[in-house]
Image (cartoon, rainbow, N blue to C red; front, top):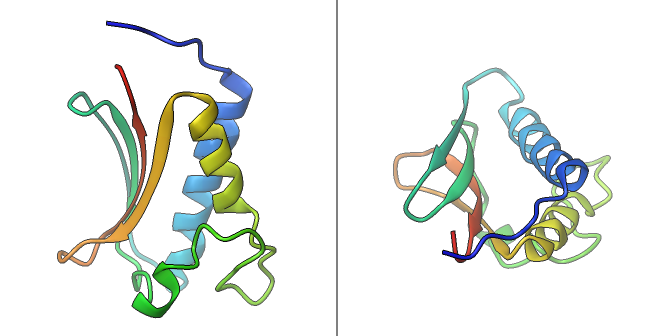
Length: 109
């Protein structure tokens, strides 16, 4: 089992951005859940907001693309870059249950 060092400051920034995105999506209230899974090893931030518009799904990881009026479109790009530096990848999807999950999935853990 190979392990890789974690840059705590960068990982904190990624998690802050994941939670911030979830909070902003709730608008009129809702719930956020954070969980850690072992198989695969991942950190999941989930919210029960309105979900991701299917028309926006393909552009979410595009730098400077934002669905928010005041958004700069760098949050998800930053999370993705931090994930890649930690042998992980970012997944973002709205599940059939209505919950939207932002996941940092780690390789080789």
